Image 1 (spheres, rainbow, N blue to C red):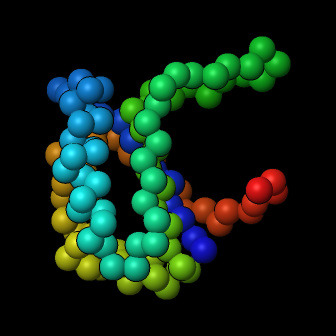
Image 2: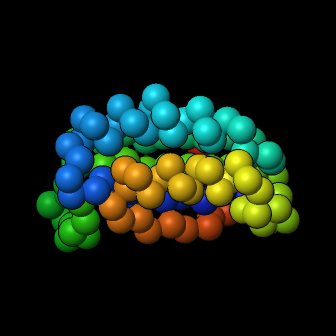
Length: 110
């Protein structure tokens, strides 16, 4: 499996609550329609955990999105579909900044 992880920050003219409501009520149903998307996870930020022994990376985000695909080919194919284009177009309505990564998960426990 391969997945993308996106660190999402709301547009400056949106509150966190507006961002979350749109993300759940409007954006999530669009994700369900993307061909080849096996799993879609929204991680809603509830707080920050800090460590005294390690410095903090300074970043302000409103959520973390995970999109799971069978492999890179499925990710690439999904990227060119009208459904993914609709998902991205909607994202531009409420996401002000994003940093996305393509990752391969290595499960250590569980």
